[in-house]
Each structure stands twice: as structure tokens, then as C-alpha cells.
Length: 63
Image (cartoon, rainbow, N blue to C red; front, top):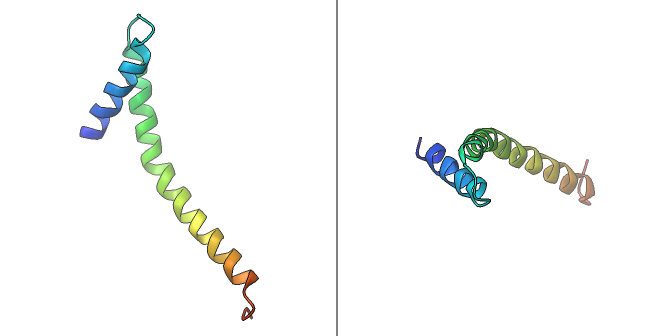
């Protein structure tokens, strides 16, 4: 919940920097935060798997 508030605040400040309203920026900030909470951990897991496969494939003791 606090993450949503922080994301909305940051999005609002970025959108309001042009002198107009910042409501759309607040909504966009929350949307990006919600997407990033699920995409970033998945990307880290897939990256770790890919790194492990790469290390195993290039090791001299591979099967």
C-alpha cells in the first residue's frame, strides 16, 4: 500500500513538472509499480536459470 502511494507521488511529480495536472502521471506510476512487482522477480529467476545453464554448458566437467 505504501508502495502504491510512493509510486503515485513520483508519477504525479513527474507529470506535474510541465505545469499542468499530474493525475495521469499518478495513475501511470501506480500501474508501472504494480507491473514491476511481478515482472522484475520473474526476470531475475529467468536470468538466474539462463546463467546456470550457460555456466553448466561451458564447464569442462559437464556431462
